[in-house]
Image (cartoon, rainbow, N blue to C red):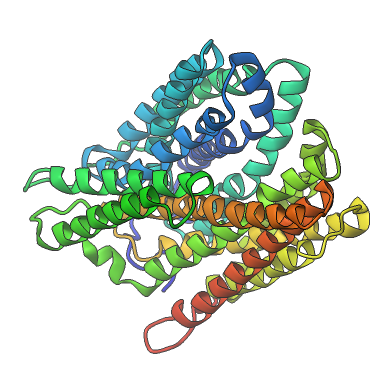
Length: 490
């Protein structure tokens, strides 16, 4: 099923809309993409500044991880709820509220003088990002109803997610080295204010969905608490282990809450997440592929940066520059190449091609030597990262393909939620495996660089296995009813 099947075809399109209306849509896309870029950047820009933050504010080693985890937990656990709230009260309202909260929290983070204030600000940033991210994609698919326009719009929007993390590392290194760590947060102030000012006149004032039966308060509590506890449990695994009593206990409680949410949605008069959303093979298949793909690509996005700094002794800025080719090829492919290929061959074929390239990235990195030459050992992997520029736009279109207009915010929130779950899984699984392998090699007498590289090799190899699993799911699940694959359009 194509990305327009379940959505209304009325409204302004490339062929029927006036030129001013068309310009308004593309300006709105710029606002949505800028807001998404801020959210993605905020998840990665802080990583290269952590040593400076620890030194300045006096964080303990364990406490420092919560500069990242506080954002991740709030962001990931509230996306689904925020998406449904957008459907019920208006996606434009939720978007503006999220931008205002995120911008204010960024100022608080930049001015933080104690660890407690910074962690609280990061938590508030996560809430604001959840509100923005959950409804942005839903606004986009209701703005662009023409298939070709929507393909281009999704490509632009996907670029911000695909390349934003790499850009964040470059920008974080430059700001931290040239100014101070505070500016990685304060830079959001002018961007946020400008985004709100432009969004007010250009974003459509959507009509909220009917709420005859009231809001599903119990469902909201179950899903938010279940996801928050699940992500909290996952990010603690590296420090506490998979088999510890706290991990097993908290994990069991999180699963119980999530199971309760599913049961509630099957019986509630006005469910927070109507289970009909998950009946589409395209929707649940795309979300499952995304979990596997994002979990695998954590090993590229984060562990490569650690390898460059801890093994090759790159500085923060040089690390960002070294990863810049990946951001460039992802951007070019997602903005220019992917829309044309999707229009010609269909989303499924483009997704499968992208996954093959991503498997090549991680297979190459699984053999990277201790004393690597950047041009021959690392640059080929950076260039093959173009596969992400193919995979993400195609996957985004598939994940939103069967969303009704009234459920667009929910489908958007679900897609972003699975992205965060995949990220949390990648953090827990691949970091734990790399650390365990590094420790074993060090105990066996290997030097630090060799032990670290061996740990990263294992993580990259497991990441390649996750990409292979994502390919298998995409190949077998993402088909039209009756077995035909997504048809090309042209």
